Image (cartoon, rainbow, N blue to C red; front, side):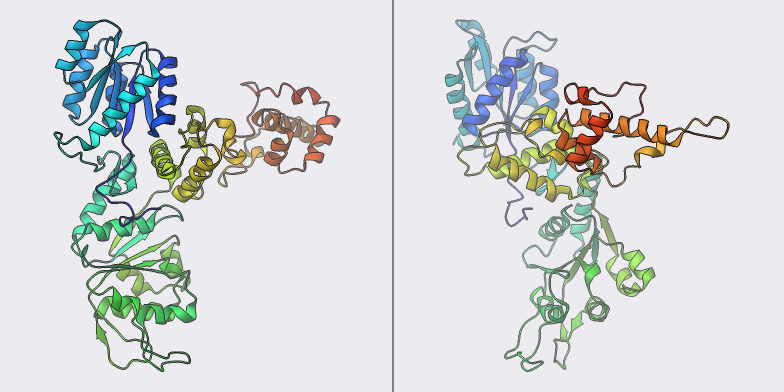
Length: 497
């Protein structure tokens, strides 16, 4: 994930193009051409109301709209409201060929240019390219503010969901206080280090260094020296004095990632740094004063570790002055389309054949996936897709199998399929073998339906060998399922989510 140093918090590439066309086919065709030729995220709407809603939520720099719209809000009203909503959006109107009156009108309304309808695609690409250049660099136009609207993200942290909006407000308050320790908790891949970077970058210590230390990545025997430094001759191999990261972070911020992996002996020395504002290098005799802000992060439950005696209680309370929890991606899935757009643009940089994005069906399916690896897993997926499918949009069938078919196999919290099955008891007895056979048959049929007849994928869902599944299909006379693989009827219990 990018850090504020790698990605200027005042800049973003998430500005896109919006096409308003009452014909979805025409709009999508033009969108595909603009994505391919210009490498931008291109969204579509079929009416003015939808277009205004998109512009309120997304970061749009260029609008291409039909001037004559069939809904209540005309093209005139759309242009007026667009310029009022954001004067920096460049507008292009599509007008029937030869309609001089409308040409005069759209230019009077402040449109950058007009094009003829139906679209001449080559002409539209040229005009759109000029409009994009004008949006960013025209000398007579105020410099574009590239800052994210807070509805989309905050200094490189992407999200418009309610939980993320609350997080952004909290970070703003935390950043102003340059002395209190912060404990960031969240699952792996949620962006804990990025949050720490933003807190530092927005605080009073921003002109000094933020020094990261990954307590899980540095061997125990080296971590003490890395943190506190050592004097010459302190141990075998210490041929010269070395400054530790605590001292290097003086006047700035010390970021301790995966603090839960730090051994108790070092926890005691860290506690002294926080309480006394001083430390002793390995082999040193004189304490060295230091002024740092400590931000710690972990994916572990430190309270449980305190109860188990593996983490010092006094250090936990010193670190947990300002607790900050980052929600996992599965709890803010409404942010997924925005994250996809961000990563598509990130991995399209300097690529000859840019990825055009993800089709709606693919996005809907990804929204159902539990994302155990969180943002990092999503980023890796988009990078993978950008390499394999440059020059096109990612369809549902292009996704790796585990993303195409969210199931109990990828959802560790899913209940066993048999849990919800009601057994009809008759005189206190059941036919065990018959019930098991019926259940197994339903299970195989539904797996085949989810896999769309692909027996290899169905076997993966069932955690069976393909040969074993084929034998069961033959034994149960389910060969017809190989062709049709019907979805289970509405009154048949669903065995897969």
